[in-house]
Image 1 (cartoon, rainbow, N blue to C red):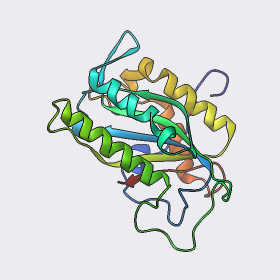
Image 2 (cartoon, rainbow, N blue to C red):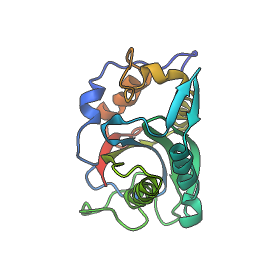
Image 3 (cartoon, rainbow, N blue to C red):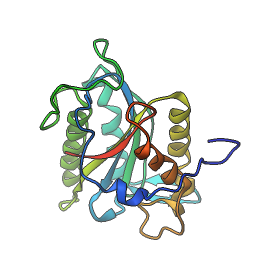
Length: 211
């Protein structure tokens, strides 16, 4: 945010956001803050509905919230920041503490799958457990989209901007790219897309990750 307005950068965010390649060689088990998004397959609204700018969670939505809040208990190196469960997707900021690593470190060889303790492993476990519980609740055909999306948070300004987006997400549901009845573009999408054109290691990067 700047002067009360989202920073606007004209970029083809929709096309970039759907790519299926991760950051080559980036070590997702290293210390750092990550903005993550997971979406329900076919954008089905099963987690509740937005009413007058407020997210009203269904039983399924409360279950997803509950599972996310369990993450630090299962993985002590993780700290949760702001998050929101929306009708058909979830946004959250997750912080990984690893005293042996530095933010933005790279491996000599890119991993072929989620490494134990990495962001990918955490998200895969979260999605798997939530799926099992969803089906136990009677949503037998429930599934997440195959990918999850992550953005590496590099500075405090970016962190605060993302926090504000998460907190105001229900108010901006009409502009949400996951809303089947979306009325207009959201400036936040264009702001986030600007990182795709910046040199790696400057501020951050967003990319879909397979789980």
